[in-house]
Image 1 (tube, rainbow, N blue to C red):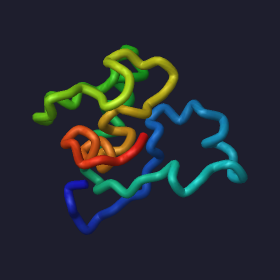
Image 2: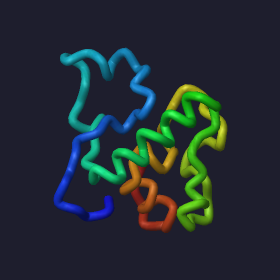
Image 3: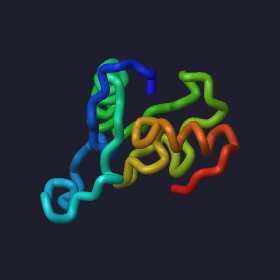
Image 4: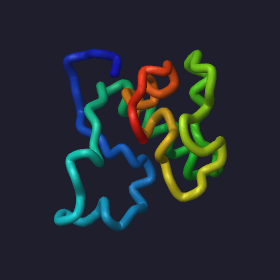
Length: 101
């Protein structure tokens, strides 16, 4: 995302409240994503806002026709479907390019 040279590895789950993600033996490579530093900083802020309010990020502010690809605007125990959980997959699903959640 943002195609810069400064890539960071980030948890897809911005809340990191899943005990499986905190265990070195059960975490998987697919639990992480590469993000540029600016994207990672933005994700951190949006995830903090979600934790504080219970409202998920609305991808329509980025020009998408939909807010989430799974779930709705209220956090209900999973980040899956939120733009920031996986921007690449979100873009594929929101643009009709296939993909699977």
